[in-house]
Length: 105
Image (cartoon, rainbow, N blue to C red):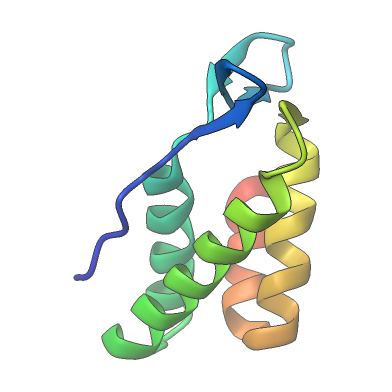
């Protein structure tokens, strides 16, 4: 499985800041690209997508998420979830279904 190097920091002026995800109960935690990659990969593989295609989906969505997050210091888990669902629905509806269903379970 291919892994992306997580770079959760951005520069704002002279300060380095870490992207934060606000969880459902209000606690904050650093954005971890590897968690996003793993969850997309798992949803794709569980949706009967080949290993190679699952890696491609996970890498594409990870890259797009990093671009989307560039202008943000915080996002809610819900915003991140919605972003991933939109991306998956445009790329692979079965993986999107699996991703959504897993969250609701």
